[in-house]
Length: 608
Image 1 (cartoon, helix red, strand yellow):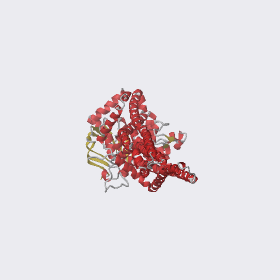
Image 2 (image 1 turned 60 degrees about the vertical axis):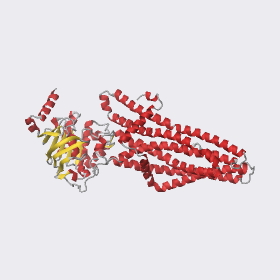
Image 3 (image 1 turned 180 degrees about the vertical axis):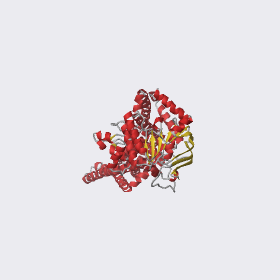
Image 4 (image 1 turned 90 degrees about the horizontal axis):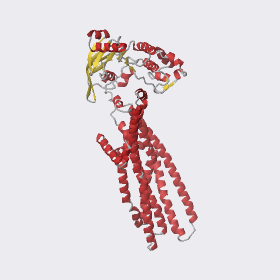
């Protein structure tokens, strides 16, 4: 996205506005509603918030009292050349400004606590929501973009709460108090001071009309950059394997440049605010000095020198809160943009709740049956009239080309998705009548891409059953043929693993996931080609461990290499979401149908 967009000053801004309008069509924005929701989080700290408001009232009152007393001192002591009582006045001024400083410190101190607690609650709600969302939500989004909601967007809200809430409230109070005292002192000079408001209003309207959409677009662009970086870093092995470094760098530069341009215009246009305010401030000073001087010289008695001094100070106090309100409104727009993205996730439809009559199974034999099951994903048919049975202890393998529906069947068994029609039952009970969490407690998964947490090997295995003892962890590792290599590691079972399991091989990671599944003692087992890309010796260890794991358990295997499933009790051949054939390996070969052709094709490919 190139720099040609910077040739015309607001060309990118117009593009940004167009993009925001497009986004609005997809989902309407509700700035007022978002602010109200943020306030609902703040209101949880009512006691501290009351103290902050009290301190703001005190500091605002003292900030008005100081200049007023100085102006009175000029008329009472300097103009009249009287010194009696001046010392007492100076002592009072010291006390006023000392308490003013203390009140500002305390309001900031308490507001930091309120902001941190608010952001803590917001971040907790967002993280909890992640665990209530269906798997389909994560399938459609980049993980880095979702991470951006937890980090950048909430940090944006945090910074705004720390900076803006007090300043907005104090600015409003100071503005109201200043106008009140100014009217009391001189309505004429008050009118002169307020004559700049129309100019200020027009200037702020022009600026905020542009910065609001730009800040929203900036947050979206930042999320895209984070999502892309997370995706490419996670897939770095694939990038290098296919020598795509130049392409991903180019794509990153496009996204990064887009973010740079959005940020450039957002900050550039918002940077007009202090310039406009300073110009209007100086204009106000000049007008007050001119009109006030004329009134004082004419000796009308309407204005004194002290009143002019008070007004010059109040003029600054009048424009300063307006300036701060304008700046904070800009910052608030940025925070609202981030908060909207957070609330959009919190408002997403959660995973469907279990039916009221859903029950828990204390045990299960693992008897699974599909009866004329159909399923569509976002109105696209995936499975059509699927029927089969897996008896207790049987191994059922699913084969077929990519997109045939193998993984979808597993997702239905584990209730990551709900089927549209037909029935899936476990021991004769419809899966929809069983609580999801309870159903999954009877299942264990060993997937092609093993996932390990940033923790010790011991705790990674114990993840299968958190109340397992250290002895049970070791027994599971031995049954999974993982104990020997674990013992050879410098830290043994206390070796810390990274999320990607760096430091151990792919085969060793698979052995750990098998140990985790063994420890869970499931009745139902799901395997997704757990031996792909493994060296021969490790593959033999994995196959031996899998046989031990599958013994006596109902197992569902997604097979890519047909030589690994020849001993399965039942093989189901899928094509375009329909069952073409099902039976044992020998039965399907005798049919000489689709499975026979696929098997022979793999043998021929292996021979070549």
